[in-house]
Length: 231
Image: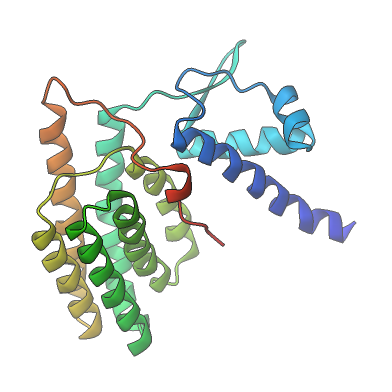
């Protein structure tokens, strides 16, 4: 009985990530009805596992439940994305603060390496790889907070953040990334939090400005292979 209980969360996670990748890659379009029975048959799992996975995707903002009709993939909404960035500003600021007390020399070196990678890929105009490296940079700071609840909350805006690429000058992003890392390395929690929050705030303002363009439309900004694996 214990083995079954241990395996179920892992199976649910696998199904969730398969559906998440299909949605983020555009293979499942907005407004598509996700039938639990057919998905369970296709994926070779029970309907209960699919139901749990869909609940998780609903929490992430990728699907919505319509009374009497079922579960559908959601259309992207700029206001929802900006709200996610407001939450991200608070959480990543707190994560950077906590990281100051937890980051080792190797952790700092990893952050600097990721910041360099983001910069190099942006110069090469490799947007998919650059986006993945940027997400890993921010995810590493969140991990260094050693706060599992913060990591859990960050999952929501991480997914929503894949819906847009902000058009920011790569040199400024590089400067901001290294500023955050330097504050963490020097154990300056107030400065680390301030810079992390400022970094996210500037990205949100760019999205708000972009949304005023009549031709602006949100679409998932990652390819199927561009979504990093998570353990």
